[in-house]
Length: 534
Image (cartoon, rainbow, N blue to C red; front, side, top):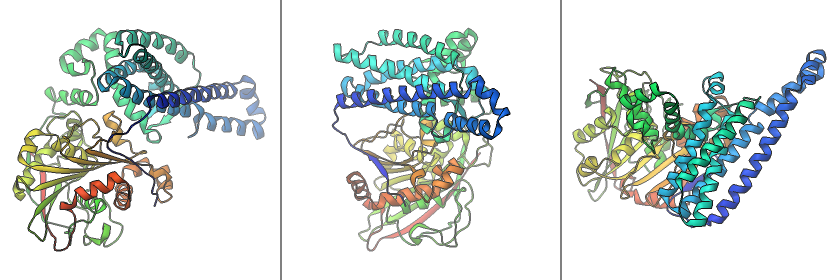
């Protein structure tokens, strides 16, 4: 089991000059690597080599294969340059936040993303020519270059005047777009990156999507007019992942796709009933796992800590509440919400609310059938207004938990004190400071990147990152199936590392969650409810 956890929580004191210097080093390194990539591309396309390979297959064909691996393999020059430059952009952004504040930095980043959007729109034919699920690596590199240039200028503005001049940045972005566009058009090589191998591209693609749409709308009056009617939120400055999802759900106004439906909640026969309260985060998430239709137990009693007896697969749409009663009579509740269980695009009566429709509505910040189901299950179970509540979920379940914890009406009805998410895109949800949030994210997991936001720790939110590809127990599986990084086995493993960690933030979170964990004289009762659309 790998113990490589990266934890972020609270505030840090950093030297912006050091961030700038590191960003500069990375940008220069990216330029050098990109230059190597250009030389390799030229070598691979050298007419002499292309013509001689069939004539001398013993040496020519292996040479072509070796060059292809250097150009398109996992460690290829252009994708590597894109990753290095993306890290440079992140450091520049962090420095800008320290120097100019959150609002000014966010505004500058939006301008930088618009510059990147211009490149993406111009490179659309190259992107369309690739296989589904792939991005052109050189286009990713050029977009990162556009962002980096704008952020460098923003830092120079702050150094000179203490402020960010957005008009000047916009002019620079347009100029850089034209310069980059010429290079993109002249590039011979269109290498592709698997998104699952580079999830940071997913995050930035989502974040840049509104700017791409806005750029395309400016160039197409017909598209612009259509969006003005159907999805005006996408055309507003600062639009993000929520606006993209909101635009998709707006289609519900003219078709049944993503249209909200009611939900019916009824008691379900308990299964895999725990023998005691959980002793840590791993056992809390194990409770969520046992309500997930995608969870496949390996053995007859496959439960973290052997807390639950053997049980088969659960039926879809089940939410579990665990009522923990301590020796002194104090009561606390753990609400366990599974992730997506149905990927069909049309919500159906009698189907589970944990579907694609809920995913889009949740990212858009809209009420969902799943949040309604959880609230109704808590009412039916008799959760008291002053009894502490922990909301825990995986994937969509974590998104639902965070959405409820940010809902003022829900917080007036229930005392939510803790949230646990695993593999959930919750970085754009503002949970009040009185709620302690623990977010587990894997670097190879695409789902947490779908909100288009970079995860940030704070005094009330602890973010734990882990690269399961570095773990010998998962490395081979991750290489064969990228979904392993989002799966239950890897997240339960990470949660176990959280429980054993001596990191101050994690120790503090576990200590604050004592009301939900096992103690002498404590007992647990479970309440299972099945939710169905109607």
